[in-house]
Every structure is written in C-alpha cells, then in structure tokens.
Length: 110
Image (tube, rainbow, N blue to C red; front, top):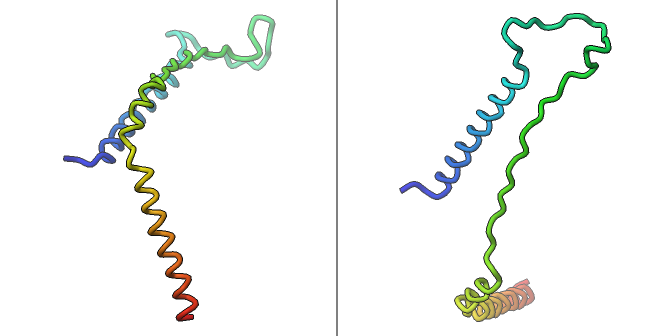
C-alpha cells in the first residue's frame, strides 16, 4: 500500500498538469485571427484603429467555501480527549525532574 505522502504528491502533480493545460489553452485562444486576415503592419494610429489592443476578459474563478462544523460538534469531541491534560502534567513533572537532576549534576561533577 503506498504511503500517504505519495498519494498527496501524485494528486498535486495531476492538479499542476491540469493548470498548465488550462493555461496553455487560454494562451493560444487569446490571439486568434480570423482565417484570411493579415496582421496590420502600419505604424500610424488613426481614429479608426485603437491605440491599445483589445483586452481579453478572463472568466472569474469560482470560489468554493469549505463547510465548517458547528461549535456544538466541536464541543462534543472535547470529552474524547479528557486524558490530555493529565498526560501533559505527567510529562511536565518528569521533564522538570530531569532538568533539576541535570542542574544538580552540573554543580556536583562540574
């Protein structure tokens, strides 16, 4: 069974390829000229030709919002982790004792 990181990497690679494909297809469709039309090589600007080329409007990206859980659901999960505070107290007690032992050893052996 592949690791979780491999599946994440493959998913990201697929989305990257998809974005590149979309970007490439948008770039080629931006400057399409009708068949039989020739590019204008004159350097004069008249009232008929605009000074700036027409801009291509890009579609607005759709924004999707993630659905968040209500606060009531989060409060229901809190009792599942009732042991965390007790474990943190034990860890801090052991760490404190080790630091005190190290300080005593520095003065005794130092």
